[in-house]
Length: 432
Ligand code: NAD
Image (cartoon, rainbow, N blue to C red; front, side, top):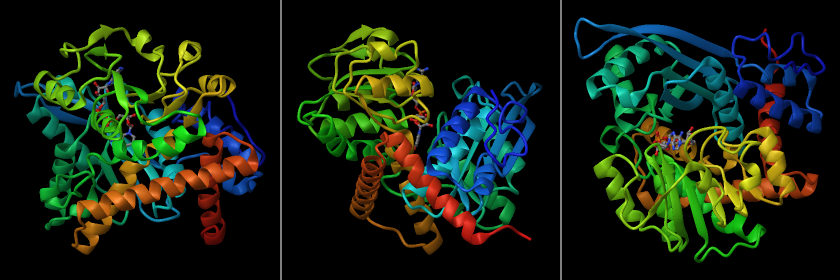
């Protein structure tokens, strides 16, 4: 596919190094909104391509000492205009430059939308973290950090956890970077353990942020929060804390899926007990008090709220017709394909898009970065209430744009994010 807007010297996809299905979707989404906004042609061209992309291959020693494997690693910084860049690092067997570039672009809109002083970035290593031992994972992480070390830093680019990475991985990155600097530099990553300058409530932030929008969104589609039936795909960093926050709000989490399988109980799962079961066994499968269902059945369940919180492209043309939820809160990045998005709109399903819905993680990451730079730490109450305030304000602002321009929430969110970045680019001008 070739998308060439006015002013484009070359097609923005197709011939580009970062071409991939996911990048084409992100670029097409951007182009659609840029067209609607009559975005300045020069800015439009600049924003359609990531500013910096690094691809590395590096060796790591397996636990069988004589065996050395090679891994692919990526870091992409989409826009460097508004401050340092910010974005997660994912470890997954199918990570590629196109996916990382698409996610970096999405991060730009997300940060701008909630008013954070960052451009978007993303990183990844093409490995299956579940197949590596802890010591192998540590060696991969430290060597990947060494490969991207010139690109990252508290004033340059600040990684965070994403799919397949966690607090421990962030601690190893912080340590490797600090060893190279000769002193501790906590602000180089967020999502660290609190003992290293990590923020309390960061782990729960994305899940909590999603659920903080549930009451306002439910109001828009006639769903009653009390007893609302919630279905969640993913029970990791995002899904688990979304489930806990939903249960605390009085919703019934009736089904959950992770890599081990999918489970269902129409009366509501005991989320706390489920979390302990997952800690013990590694997955939701086999949880007493629930029936096992298939992936297809999970997405087709009669429910009020569906929260995809695992991987991308799970709501597609193939299964969108079966979805019976009234409200979709996008916890994962890019869970809905463009085709499915249109079908959901046609079917009257309200979708709170990823750029808005899962912005709680990067918001508390921003708080963590600010705290590290100032060496002054806030209380959990301060963090949770500031997070709520930012999320709800962003939702209301997006809703206002959506009503004013008669567009869906995704288009409105992108319009708002893109406008802020475009304004910054125009006032900075072109160097030299
Ligand atoms: P994670 O690795 O902690 O958890 C992923 C969960 O999804 C696990 O329960 C895993 O078993 C499940 N899963 C993975 N592949 C699956 C599949 N094919 N089918 C069903 N379940 C599957 O990851 P996370 O940090 O929770 O991230 C989940 C999503 O949310 C990703 O798209 C990520 O980009 C996005 N996200 C994460 C954050 C964050 O703060 N961690 C912030 C914004 C967006």
